[in-house]
Image 1 (cartoon, rainbow, N blue to C red):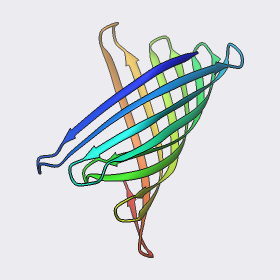
Image 2: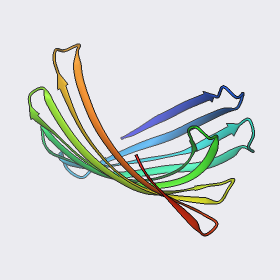
Image 3: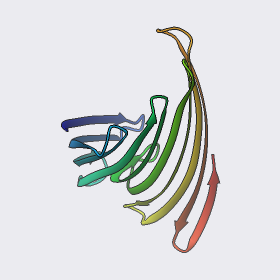
Image 4: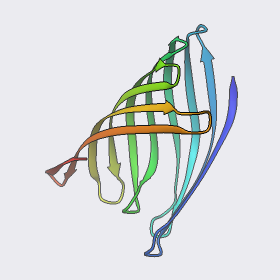
Length: 170
């Protein structure tokens, strides 16, 4: 099954800088069985910023998804794309690997856990960042219109600049 995608993003900073991107793409889903399927997304990022030359780069992600039963889903995804690092107007060449497990523990209570690992290179400064993270979340449907949600994120990053590195935990 094919579908077309389009994403537009505009970020305006108080300093007068801006970031804008257009990302057209195609999503393709292939079912191996009723339970197991893959999903591929391909497209092109057209990135413009107020201070940096424009970047026109392809992006993609590939995922394997297993609907283990009607209450449980597991997935593994690999992706690569150029993006903006929020807060400092820098273009980053990223790749990442992400896994997720989610399960309805009760009719209205969904629990999920995911991990991610990846690397990114800041194009202007040739700075390399490696990151690893874990997310755990719970979602409870109080009524059809009202839900409660709680999430915990742990992120560890390591940045290399000209032979030196810096650790960070969030």
